[in-house]
Length: 67
Image 1 (cartoon, one colour):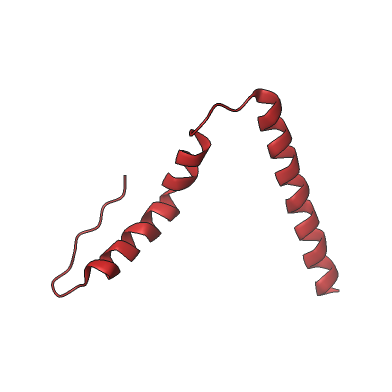
Image 2 (cartoon, rainbow, N blue to C red):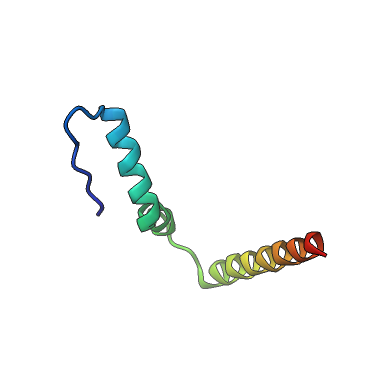
């Protein structure tokens, strides 16, 4: 779990923003969402396949723009 020390004269909001950024980089929220409920193996496979398709589509679009 990431931690943040509040610096002298630093506002709480700024420290909270740094903490949230560190949590996001560490993947804490993504991991929490992933373990929130049970996912059947077939659902996991379907989700990963759709993510791969999105990634390929994004790369193709990027290549077409570059041409």
